[in-house]
Length: 194
Image 1 (cartoon, rainbow, N blue to C red):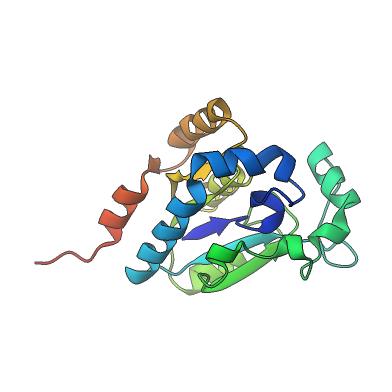
Image 2 (tube, one colour):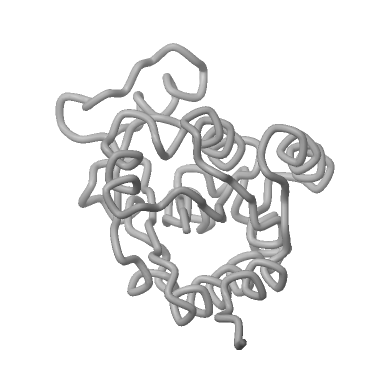
């Protein structure tokens, strides 16, 4: 399970992206759904890996090659690993088995997460996170290119608006192993009785 960018800067109104994502996230109800899904997936034995977008002193592997990356680079104090905005949101803070920080849009870029997963014989990943058209789509495509079987948990993701979210899910249906709901994912994770 890859849980992407469930951090204050992305989810909460006071976070860096709060003006863009805070209200749509709250309206969608995605936080409560994803929190329940993560807990149920963990109960079914799935390891939970959370990613955070952070910028260490010296900028780490941040490359200011897009407007998005230039904006976060200019506000990098808000993204320091120990900054309040970099913290996982309160309802999910105790959920991760492993937390990976990076300075890329893909949760698998600029870190050793792919190797970490492979060392644990993980070849399939379920993805939750915000925003669907940004880190979720980038990570899902990247993971697919790296050879992982990837499915996005459609009701545990959201974007700044519904049309963007739906368009991104349609793209992901074509470029990954497909989108599934939390209920479908939990059914697949449940142990089968003979």
